[in-house]
Image 1 (cartoon, rainbow, N blue to C red):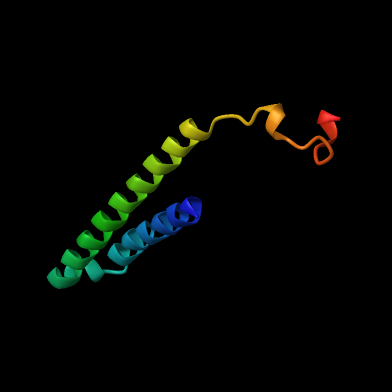
Image 2 (image 1 turned 30 degrees about the vertical axis):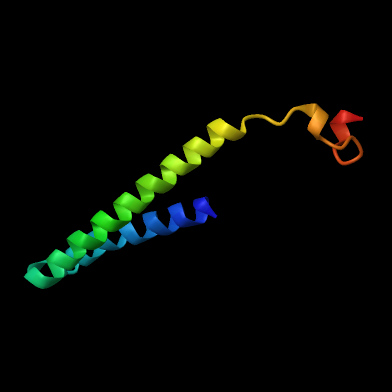
Length: 76
């Protein structure tokens, strides 16, 4: 789920350069909204990266005692 949200945040951030290249940044109201849009999705992406890194450190590697031997061919 966090990976999907991270991909969504990155996809949303890729909209900003295209909007600026299309000339939408010339309008001061649109430029302000694009800035807020970029800030929000940058913060969300940072939070998602932090949560993924924290979960990776907490979960670690699964030991073989937790695996059911019949499900994994290399543990038989």
